[in-house]
Length: 426
Image (cartoon, rainbow, N blue to C red):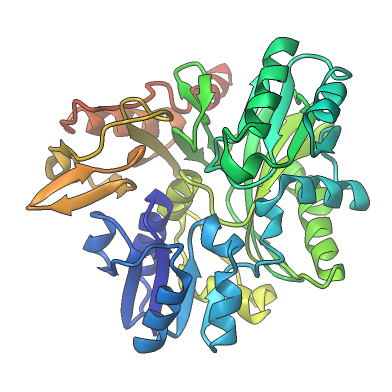
């Protein structure tokens, strides 16, 4: 089969790495890809959001199956375009992708179907947003409704900061994503990333993971797209998994089907595990990043048949096997991220760092130019390691980081701290 993978981040490198091992693949393309993906697939210089160009390429190369990595092309309707042209595609339709494209849509879906989530109000103007925020206890969560590259969420510790955040969002801080704003109560608990494949009716849960969204050690500082992750998630017991499937995932899939917009693809639920049980924070219509990296490192089965089964509506005939070891990923980011940062700085030492058999380095914002690996993004590398437990995997990942010479980059030094504390308390 000829496969086209769309995207250029660490998530896509992990997917390309996993897909490249499938004996079903004749040729694997990735558009646009990155320096790491180029090691396992043929990169094509077409942006992930250039839908017409991607479709023309897919037709020209007789692509049998397309896998869409990032959310932006899905929300823009790439799956609809490809399917209309007869190209089987893994990823939800434009209507179904609203599950990430609009936070207001998801909150209303939860309210209509009894799916547990935080108290909220969807607001289209500053006065109504401030008025509802004033009724909530501190801290207060303010979310831009649309896509904001994982950065459109502000947790305001004071009412003054809440008002400033509301004014900022409506003032264009996140572009068109902030034309509508969701005001939510703050949920206290432990976050969990839960992933499941679905074909619109059936659900196949994947391994759990936990990530670190804040930029600095101790989980402080502004939110980012994710500074590290690990899998499995110690908090995800069998009983909790059943509760999540029964109360959140399956009701969502059923509701989307009943609306006439069946959801096919990977469903990524960001959850808060509270004293009252799991509550939905938000949905994403694609694999998480960096959670995908640790999931792919642990996956023993061939990924491609599962993705095809999800698209073909036969997911109930598929099972996946996972390594028992823990996988942990540390993100190296450009200095200044999640704010402004310099592009084009050189990264050295990757060859030496990649020699460890228990470590896999997934590239995100990199480019190969004149024989040099350059950083061109905010999140740039994912140093992923397998270990017997979280502490073991963490040690291996940080040992490898010492080989990478990149003065313009930084990383958190405490990835997995909560899980390690749980391990030590046993």
